[in-house]
Image (cartoon, rainbow, N blue to C red; front, side, top):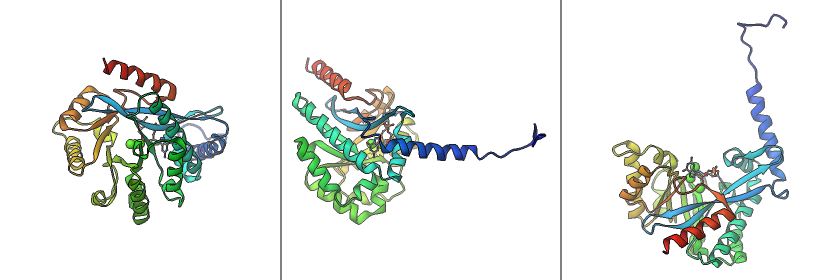
Length: 282
Ligand code: C2E
Ligand code: CA
Ligand code: CA
Ligand code: CA
């Protein structure tokens, strides 16, 4: 070992170990995150392009842990799902977001909707619909102001079961958005069988849209499918005005992205919305 010097290739298993330890660490800390009050819900405005007005918010989880610092959702949501912690966490986000929306409605912003991300695992709980309906009732919100964002994978895996659950929610006037649309591998045919109200065009398509590119063709087709099927089409990850102009020209209904606003804490989004409403009513 002493002459294991330059030129010799030593294969470390360090990166793998690091990942494993990191996952274990995150899971351990996440386990108590709720009761330790480390979680927060941020909200990102959704802008209706025909009304030129914020008509909704998307709820996005944030986690600040004393040991790990700020951990982004891309790092902890998967772990929360694997450990089933997403069930209490998801219920908490739903409750928090509904209560916040209710407070906005009471402040006169009564047109606003709330979109909440729902994991596959949550939907598969037999009491999921009951939880959603109870949460709405407790918050005093009219169900038509709530939208649940699901991904295509949810539809592929337990089609029949999920479809009947979503149909029941839709019958209560709760909206269903298909998130990250276009990135999945499933067939388009489920669009005709599923009670989908909104298509969210994935950021990856928006990033690279320029007239004439293949991405642009897809975006145009998604907007057309949405229109023909009476769905709302929203583009996510809009960062530049050229993207906004293009989407507006194509007849996209809504946009969401850093161009307008990053996700923000409840208090600051409340102030922002109140300010914007004042300006637009001038
Ligand atoms: P998502 O549902 O696709 O959410 C959109 C993500 O894009 C958010 O990242 C948002 O902050 C980010 N984003 C929005 N506009 C822009 C933009 O213009 N540029 C860029 N670069 N990014 C933008 P975030 O908050 O880090 O969340 C990542 C993912 O974590 C979400 O993707 C969602 O899948 C998951 N997630 C977040 N909160 C929750 C939750 O409460 N429950 C569940 N099940 N998943 C959640
Ligand atoms: Ca989403
Ligand atoms: Ca998305
Ligand atoms: Ca995404």
